[in-house]
Image (cartoon, rainbow, N blue to C red; front, side, top):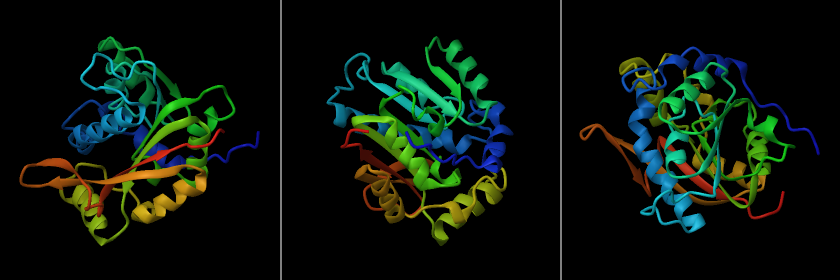
Length: 250
C-alpha cells in the first residue's frame, strides 16, 4: 500500500502538550471545549444513530460499533461514546494527553483503548472503524487533504466521519482568536492560526477529494445571553461540523 504522508505539525502538537494536565478542568484552558461539548455530542449521537439505525433510548445503543477519536485529547468525547456501548479507540499525537485520558477513564471504570499516534500510523494495519470523530483537528494539521485521505482509509464501507472545524472570515478571527484568546482568555494566545481555518465549501471539496461523500453540515452557534451553544442549519460563520460517508471499499 502506498505510504501516507505524515501531516503532523510539531508546533501544533507542542501547544496541546503544554496544556495536557488541564483537560478535565471545566474552568481551565479547555473551558471552551467543555462548554461546546454538549452541543458536539448532540450532533455526534444523532448522526451515528441515524446512520446505523440505533435507538438512543435503549441501553448501550452503540454496542457493536467501533469508534475512532482522532486528536482525542483528554477523552472528552471518548468517554461518552464508551458509555453508549461503543468500542472506542482514542489516538493523539501529543504524548502527554494519553496518560491523562487513561487515568480519567480508569477512575470512571471505562474501557477505552488510548494510543499515542496519528491517523496515518493506523493506515495499513487491520484497523477499520465504523465511525471516525475528527473534531477540531483539521485546522491543526500540515496537509488537510492527506489527513482526510488517511481517515477515509480507516473507515469501513458505509462508515461515518464527523469533522468539525472553524470557518475562515473576519467574524471567526474576531471571535475564535481575538475573543477566545485575548479578551476572554479561554485559550492561550497562539492556540489557533487564522490562516489554517477552513471555509465550509473548502472542507466539502477536501472531503470529496479524499473519497468521502459529504452528507450534512451544521453550525455551532454561541449565544452570549444564554451562555450556551446550539446547532444551526444556517449559521456556519464560525464553528461548524460536517458528516460524511465512505461509500466505497478501501
